[in-house]
Image (cartoon, rainbow, N blue to C red; front, side, top):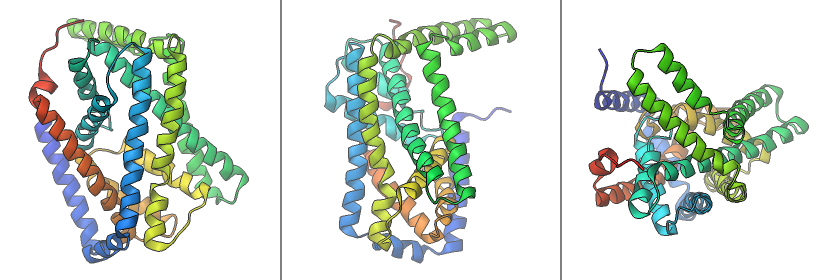
Length: 339
């Protein structure tokens, strides 16, 4: 029996709450609260600033990509569209990509551009964002090779680097070389599976999107490179979040190599294990394992996770307010005329 989306979401919430409850019962909620209070208002304000600046530079990067495609959208609308997208992705166990169609729909409604073109700008900017993430991790891996990072920890960093480098390289090569791998895969499925009509539509859609996205690495390469630089700045603000938090709670200063290792492992956790809404339970458990490598207790790791989530939930609320303004059900499920 195939479970519906609402059922799987409900089950993932129950799973996440169960895991989180077990974690809190084991380490003690009082210890977590004590760690959070140690952050102080000044530390909390800096955490907020780092997250706001991350969203800001992400949005500017996307606006630049859209400009290259001839999609004219004001910064304010683009910013709130990204926040709305973040809200959906945050609450959906979908590996952080569930909200991207929402982002495209918001811009489509307020501009003269087609949905497919707007969505192509989103995918192109996501690739530049991933490339920026890889660049930061690679830099840390190189420093680790020539630094004092323990060999067993260095192995993890190198493996994570290879994972992200491989993924980004395949995507860029696919679009730059116009290989149309996703179109070919859809065509392969069409030949092998009985749902010919459905898969023919998927193949046509994939071909159209891949042609649009490939323009980012051909006709619009200057805009794409500009977006990469801005995404690199945004990544730096993500990179320093643990440093801000643990400096104010413990007075601890991480080395660049340690921060890179933290960033790399948190990126893997966020990218591939976002299987409950808000990452509830899963992220806390993951953080306990990650921060344990640096001598940080479970209560401190969970407190860090909660502190970040409190700020993120504020943006989730703003995003949902935006979607309510548009009519969230209509925005997500209304039929669009083909462009």
